Image (cartoon, rainbow, N blue to C red; front, side):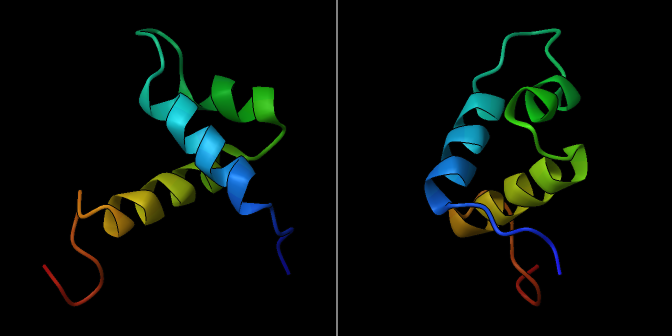
Length: 60
């Protein structure tokens, strides 16, 4: 089972990824926080659905 991260950490990492400077990759941000890049990608997709940025399953 994958490691569970606190909600506050997930929110902070997603916020940093959203406001990153040009040229800063998601991999760099993930490495800085000690998480996998794929994990960050999943958190961003989950955030997009939760905030209405993109449709969830069965909604689009």
